[in-house]
Image 1 (tube, helix red, strand yellow):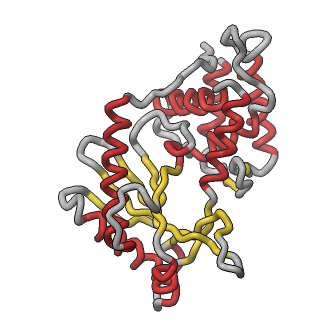
Image 2: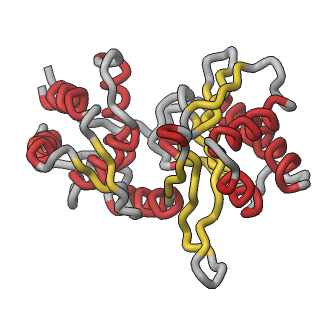
Length: 270
């Protein structure tokens, strides 16, 4: 039985979004107080990940990027051993001041906050990447504690802008498709791994010129759009499971997600 794409809209209830915002401001204020000597609860932070791209359907992972001063990068980059690990511990300590009873752990690239109500935050400390003239390039450096510690780069703003523009062009079909795939994953294939960035990057590439029209259908005949998605998935398997993130074109490795993506798309096609 098929499960064709349908309009999803905002799937996270208003009260949950308000709680997310409250906790976002608390975390931001804690970071700004510790690292910037500022009382602002909005500066130097932004939503990233699925929530930032407006494709999230629940509160299991709310990702926040917090920008730290450049001198902190110099401090931890020059320190002996795994400076990236020590940086995550410093961020963890700052957040603990506001949430002393919460389960807060440094894990790989982020500091994770597991709230007792099931909501989870992942805090990514980052630094603005500067060119030779001291100008911001638009990308961020963030720590990775694996393999002795190193720095990686990300450009979430350009990814969010690209997603928003294609969602506008498709009359909302892009976001609805990403949310629908998440819904099928969570309700039928939750034991499998399918990363959010893989979903969003795949749909961004596969959607082509498809769009919702005034009658609410994105296809000439029922199932045509879904078949087009499945065909795009078949091509992905032959490409070495490599996708490009929207806007930034950074490589997204879909190797660990490819099997679940196939199961979800086959379920949708029916």
